[in-house]
Length: 276
Ligand code: SF4
Ligand code: SF4
Ligand SMILES: [Zn+2]
Image 1 (cartoon, rainbow, N blue to C red):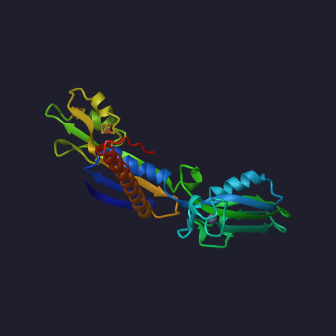
Image 2 (spheres, helix red, strand yellow):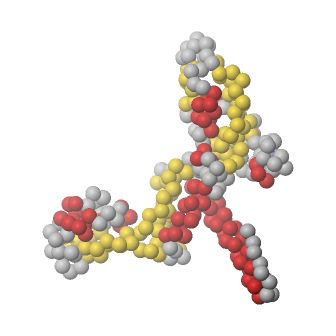
Image 3 (tube, rainbow, N blue to C red):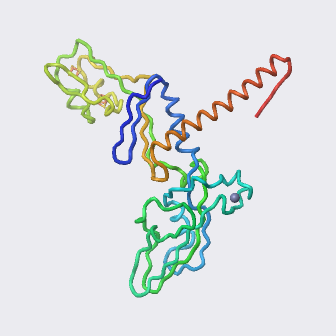
């Protein structure tokens, strides 16, 4: 297996992995989406809310604000508090704003953290306050993972794409129909030849195959290569998420190997062995 290319573009990371089945790359994608611990607001105590939004809506809006930090926090399920919440597994963020005379928008930057957990972006609107309205609350952030709730999902995009393979045979008479019909502009005629100019732009729609009057073009995919694209919400960098996912996969494979080993030892000792 080899990583052929890693490219960053804005907040996105593209990684082309060769020599591995796309299902393997998809396992990494699923881990990133569901199994990595990042912080998010999980409890909100509202002391005062005279805004037009219900408490529940404000709590929901707070929970969806991407947070960074929290690397030193305990995982709540493994904390000595048994997940009830304590300073080792939670960080408090308070919000206390009153719109005195003018209408004002309360942004995520107004949250005051009592630990090392902060909003990724200070410009996320939480609520609008009219003159005289007030909001006062304490929110608690804790680590969680995407399989518990979308607020703990560390990516806004995480997709795997098969590597397209386009073959053109000698029947091609350069009529150009496929070039014209391809919405992704993958093909072009250059120096009297039909060529693929951007293979990863191909969506595998096979329109070119359908419109070709000579059956000269064939589209398939390489089942030993795939591209993983991810875009972080900002709680961890794309590179950190990728490494965290690889470590998690290695750890789970290690656990599986130990279970299989103990079953095999049981079988060779003539015992029946079952395990969860
Ligand atoms: S439509 Fe067929 S024949 Fe025409 S350029 Fe494309 S591959 Fe060649
Ligand atoms: S499969 Fe679709 S996207 Fe790919 S080259 Fe053909 S028409 Fe273009
Ligand atoms: Zn705790």
